[in-house]
Image 1 (cartoon, rainbow over the protein chains, first blue to last red):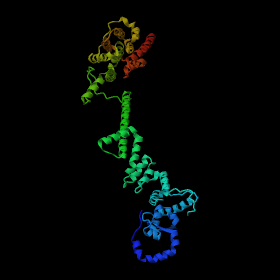
Image 2: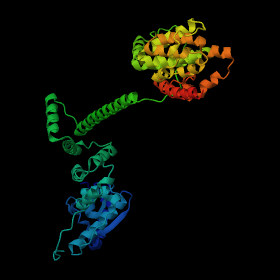
Image 3: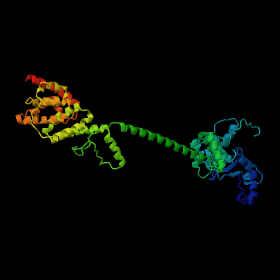
Image 4: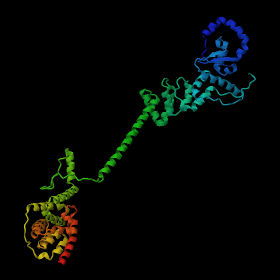
Length: 125
Length: 356
């Protein structure tokens, strides 16, 4: 598991106070969605509930320690390509649907199989 | 969220992916970077060729921790558990361990080589058998071997080995030439040569000789007789002599019938003289003599008679007897044929006699 403990949090330290105020105002909203960023820089904004399907993301977002991920609700995945990340997000939503009773089939393109498997393994999903 | 009932836990993405990978294992190539535990799950379902392909496509990663066990299983399946245990013991003893894939490939090579050898041996056997059969077959030959030289003065026992260079081949050729079949063939050849070499004047003498000799002698003696004939024909000049036994002319037909070959033609000639009949009767009882007597006859025979009586007809007369043809021709028909033919001719002659 990798947390991007980075310059970001340090750089933001100064402006943190300001942001915190803004965040409190947008907390509800912030709490509801999470941003996942792929290696190409694509940003996927998904529900927090959906993101929590992945154990890795869940621990990232809920860990105590003041990591930027938990604060910002943004997680970057420099190892995961856009197509795969997209598929993963789709899986999140399918998983919630499935658990709510709508049992359909989750189709995966064969070309993505191995990569998706590797990413899913990393994300503990 | 607490109120939500999680009726069924959805399958994890990892599981889904693994299932899909197993279904499409034949399309898998490069697997570098994949977790070994996952890889193990997937590769268990692939065949030998597929495993080989995956390993070869993933050159940058050593998959042995995963694949070694798999190769061991393949080895056992192919070559038996006994062999497996044997190989393992060997490795333990020599404290060397090889990758099972390498062992498998080495074993495969050995087996292939053995098979190839066996196939080659079988092929060779078939070839040998074929060659043996071919050598036994009689083959048609378009042309006769060339005559080196005339066999004059040839005792019949010297063989031409000038072509043969190696000693072994000389011996082999000698054996062949000494065999009965070849002797017969050479004898026949000599007959034809004799006939071709003999002059027209000598023809009757020779022709007369041949049938009588054949009749009186066995095949093996032909050569001797022919030689005698040759000697006689070459050495003795023509002589006109009246036959000593004259009373036998009445018996001529019987003697001729008894089987002389070409004498009938002589008889025709002898109507002008009785010589042939007498000679015939004599030859019936004698072996080698006939040649000589006939030679004496030749003096009185067609050539001389022809010249004396100016009968150009004689040769044609001879030819008119169909049975006589063989004597004058270069035909290498057997002597027996001559005899039969001459017998027929003799009967025809009888008719002629009667007519006259």
